[in-house]
Image 1 (cartoon, helix red, strand yellow):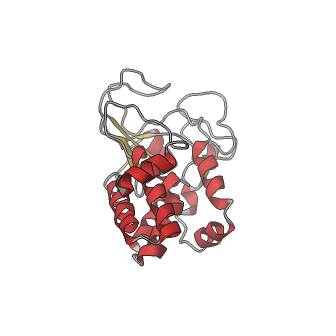
Image 2 (tube, rainbow, N blue to C red; image 1 turned 120 degrees about the vertical axis):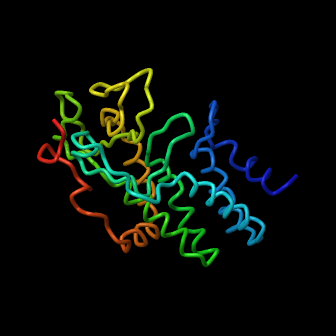
Length: 224
């Protein structure tokens, strides 16, 4: 049994089973976490190599640039920046903040490897995932009711690939710049879970912040 097999066995009870017709970025999270945990436990350098392989795989999905928003689109109105986010999958060309799941392990990998790049990528993920948080009065995509406080959008469309099922207010044939109704709470849940660790809280508090205008959105900055 290889060390990679051990990681899968260790995490099989807590990792979700992803069944998909495409490659995606989410499936690497258990491998990264498992490798870093076992490296911390055993100090076996082979786990460092596995953890870095996982981190490089995640990096391949991460945006290293800011894609200009379509003028007049929802993402243009809220000033969304793709930098630091991750593409969801090969057949689902949206950006999302799911890489938050990997932030604690990228921080620890940076410490264990002595390579600051991993923390730099964690900072970019955190800032990307801290955009567009509704404070309770945000109105988007023609939906009359304000989006709940703390909610964020789940995915951001950055291509004009057609959609068989479009969210309310989305042009199915030209969806670039649209969102998904701003109803999800899992990005906030992930951030709060990370911040529940006092050491990670202190670390993140020292990170450079993104532009304040992108952090909290109200009706004054929304696309009504």
